Image (cartoon, rainbow, N blue to C red; front, side, top):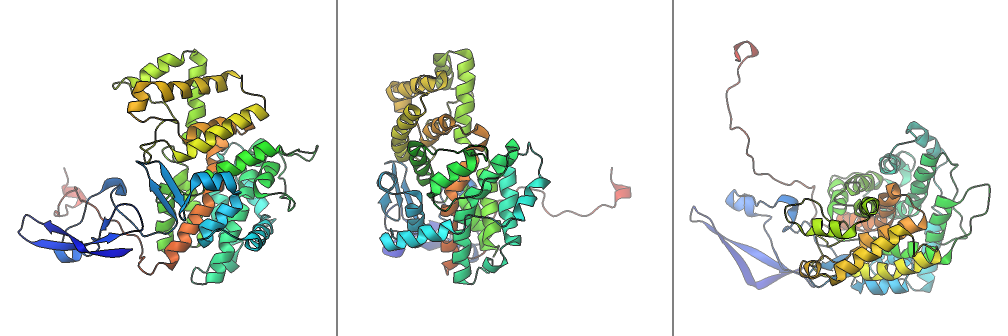
Length: 434
């Protein structure tokens, strides 16, 4: 970040005072106006609900241009990473800033693989949950509890401990996610296998049972890898900001990632692909897709099509391009191209890409639309979709947390407010209150 010496913002207040605010430029993207001294200088706060116009940090990790449909990780286009890398290669990039060479990749893969098992006593922790507990509730509790088992990686001032914690989280969250799923089914936990890739191992822990051999379909393993890559990081979204805010207080990394999982659980954040499947089920019951399209166009109808458009991307979601191709491959591999739900999804996709209303509003199918279809076809229940999102996003959270810890400008988060309550008033004893 550099200060733009030739461009200073000037703020004039009604009291006649004016202030010069430095403007900073990043590598790419909008410039930012520095206001960190505004309160001390002028006794004024800024007001920005949702922080949609506020830069809360500087970051080298991810860049998004929503108008152009661009998503970059460390400068690399998401399409190139998804087409040419596996998940752990992208994880290395996010954590270390550069793509690994062959030796670095091999060492990193081995490091993550050797951390995939969880403490055996942690399995007993699951017995405290009801069988019908939502898997995200279980994830919040178990991931937060990791700090009670791995005391040797909770000192955030020690770079070596931060590194170990980072590797442990990337390695163990898939194991915990699979355990949460198996627990809900009443099936035995499946231990990770060191001879499998990250995505293969996750499918193995999710779907295998002791009674028979589970054969991993390479098409599904590749699709799982792409889903993980496409959800690995997405700049300063709600859950990432939650991780950073929790981390700014000095909380241990396991607690911070648990906080991120809790934020991701919200239906406005991580539950979008689950909502796609619920919508398709509801449309399928009536059998009239055009009626739902009509409802989506009606400005007086609260109904909206899930999986279309995006808050950030005002153009085509670059991740959706990759997911569309993957959806075709998965549906063909599992022989479900002609099942009613997936035929309905294709019909909705065709309408959105051809109908002038959707084109003018830029309501294109997004990554959640395609990932929801893919995960359903692969056999994942919709209730586990957000858990898969958490598995993918863990490395992004960890990378952002590490960057926050190492940033000398970062302080404990403390947003301000516009107070609209009562002004100071006299206390009245309870006997005298009417």
